Image 1 (cartoon, rainbow, N blue to C red):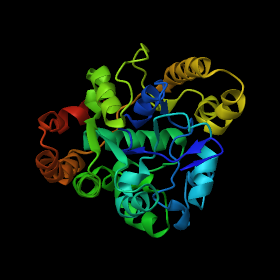
Image 2 (image 1 turned 90 degrees about the vertical axis):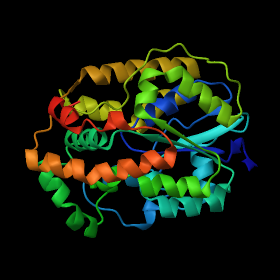
Image 3 (image 1 turned 90 degrees about the horizontal axis):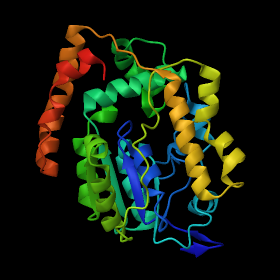
Length: 318
């Protein structure tokens, strides 16, 4: 679908949250044959705009909402027509997998390429909780926050606060695998330890040149922790501010360098910390995720034994 220099996506990075999707979008966008909007988390296919969301963070999320597919294309995919691979990253697509799959098939068809990133669910849960604290969105201890989800859900709070449900992967991944044949699954650990291999596999999936075009060092995007300066962090994380200042005014290669500098500065402003939880809640986390991980192992045909050292992960606060 071509219109005024736009082009419909032919690949989507659908999740999971806190699993390296922002980094993957950044690295893929360096390829000259790949187009990814500078905005991330577009919330279109999940149809969250129909949910009347409330609670902390809802105003920020609503700023990305569009009601119609044509508006979505015109707003986020100008300049995409000259690229072979066109895509975007929205982690809510995995969480709201039923509505997302239905809308993806409606607008993009069944042959669209799907990329899923997954992370140890305990590690991802703790990272998501830190992220909510960092934003000033969360004011409860993790254990109380988990218990509060059902009530928050009734009040239409963001899915970000479903600290357990967001990282129960099996049903979500199975649904995407059952509906889209061109689906690739990577682990957060893969991106950390063999980034170039991951990128080459993505390039093959997207049918672009397999040549790596970037020698950038690994950068940790959207690191979670306690902000040393909340106002400055808010400015650095505000996609609209970054876009207005830089996107339309400088060449792409310089924009990437600025983004790298911004993210390195952002990381310096974040102080990591351990999430304090009781031993009984730790056991609850292990019990909650372990069965799902076992089913996921069989589904994707890959050992996830390195995900099962839950006690070590929690005690070190990684």
